[in-house]
Image: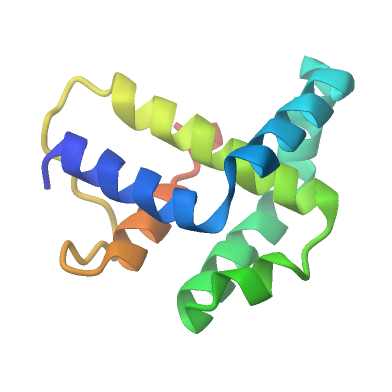
Length: 121
């Protein structure tokens, strides 16, 4: 799949799940937390965010699932999106293949992007 298409699909899915106001609130909390504590939070919440992504993919009822997570997990989820999109955007390749990505299924494209573990790259 073309990188632009993968990024567009992922952005569209996130816009359905997270409002601009919610992103603004997460960003404000992040600024108060600072870089060091933000990085620590991302690492501490890593497994919970992975589970959250898989739960959303399994249920397809993202609002119901997202409403149940803690503030820290939600913040880490939003910043996982930013981190992974930046990683993909910076790749030189124009074609992207990710594990378990089904191009015809927007949720699978979104989940494949969200499950990239940039900490291991």
